[in-house]
Image 1 (cartoon, rainbow, N blue to C red):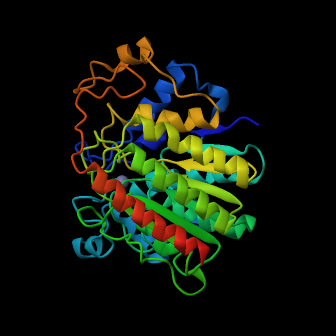
Image 2: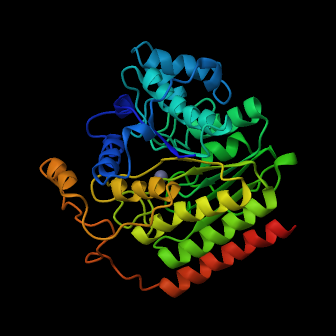
Amino acid sequence: MKPLYIYDDELLKYRFSDSHPFNQMRLKLTTDLLKDSGYLTTEHIVKPRTATIKELSLVHSKAYIQAVQDAGHNLLSTEELIKYGLETEDTPSFKDMHEKSALLVGATLTAVDLVMTGKTNQAVNLSGGLHHGFSGKASGFCIYNDAAVACEYIVQNYNKTVLYVDTDAHHGDGVQWTFYGRNDVATLSIHETGRYLFPGTGSVTERGTEEGFGYAVNLPIDAFTEDDSFLEVFKKSLEGAIQKFKPDIILSQNGVDAHFRDPMTHLSLTSKSFEEIPRFVKKMADQYTNGKWIAIGGGGYNIWQVVPRMWSQIWLAMNEEEAPRGPLPTCFIERYKDECKVVFPLNWEDTLEDYMEIPRRKEITEKNHNTLNRILMYFEQ
Ligand SMILES: [Zn+2]
């Protein structure tokens, strides 16, 4: 069964403003890079459907959905906009925001249906991964939380359990709080410590409540964490979580804002981590969930130098392709080099001429290692 890739140009229209850092142009760049290098053809691509109000209501309150619809047609007072988190610099309202946001959720549900009905084992929707959306409030560039809706949809429509694994630099708070008291959706988030970064939550001690106790797992890592330390905590915590929770399916959120060239965070990962992350998730899925794996996107704010190459690795991992080395396809570079206002990357792998060595490396590694050990101890309880 070949993996499937959910895409349509319509998904690019989830856009707060021309100058907003969340820019879905990165979806088109990734898709074109994969096509130009021969890894993606039209037979792999499935067009997304739109999520229905009923589906959005699996996670979001009726009042909030109505507010998003109204805000998209300029019908909401400033006071109401503030109440629903739609009047902030991060997440302002925009025209037809309900329709654009519901399509993005529908794209993740399209991937879910293809996998859960056995049409394929693995599918990817890079337009999704909006993990900060809350039941009744927008937050951190996220209107509707496609990841949370997808988890609840899998539980209710297919009666299966999910392990949600989130490697975005920011804590996957919206998904965590949605399932905080539940044992049918386990959440594992590995993120930069909330001490200096939005949203500030995601400490080791957030573990869930009542029957969900132990099913929320947080691994906050230190600012300036590098590849080796990240990969150690990521691989060991994911394997521990999957052995403990025995989920039917993995849903992975693949924010790439932990890259050292991302302008919004303070982590120091390179292409090495982003090559290995999806390949390890695939290995875990093949070993523990009969190959069932859905991947979604997430953060990533250096859309030229980082996102297309890093996200391509998810699709390559699904197709069991090794990480390519050397030059990107000439036609891809030619197509975009004038539009790109920064130094255009020429190779698949990072060239590290501007990579700063971290003086506190040993201390950071030890700290992360200790956090990991605490998590692994929880798994044994
Ligand atoms: Zn992020």
